[in-house]
Length: 135
Image 1 (cartoon, one colour):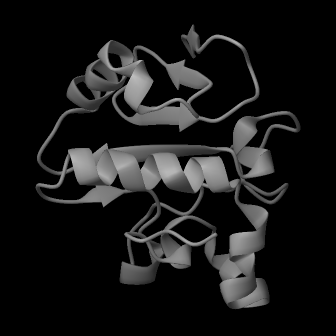
Image 2 (spheres, rainbow, N blue to C red; image 1 turned 135 degrees about the vertical axis):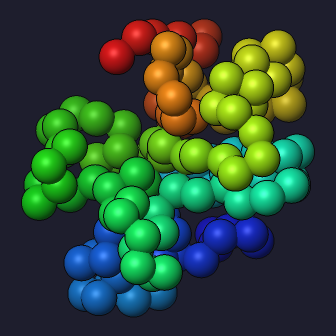
Image 3 (cartoon, helix red, strand yellow; image 1 turned 180 degrees about the vertical axis):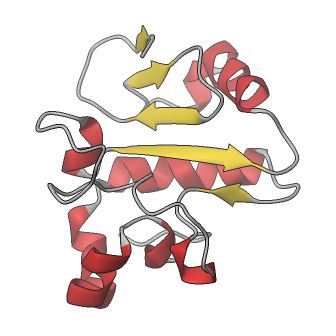
């Protein structure tokens, strides 16, 4: 499954894209892709950025993380292609996060939401009830 609204380069690190190209979609959980697209459709103004290395930005590890990432953790949802961190140009992360929390029925794939941070962390871990946690 591919995103309707994001390029693969926005979701994987540069090194993964250079090695796998379009086949890097295989490394991402389809539920994560569904949630990304749904959030972007719900918050359409401005940009929603995961990785921006393609445009010479400094975000390279906010989607899929490999052992080469300085933020790598063996059991992180990022390591399994099930998590993303996003920043928005026209909304605060808290506005988006609170909307998701208040409307979980619109985002049934969400399994984890990180609280108390300046970016939006969402993951699609396999749980019965959404896990909300602090860093």
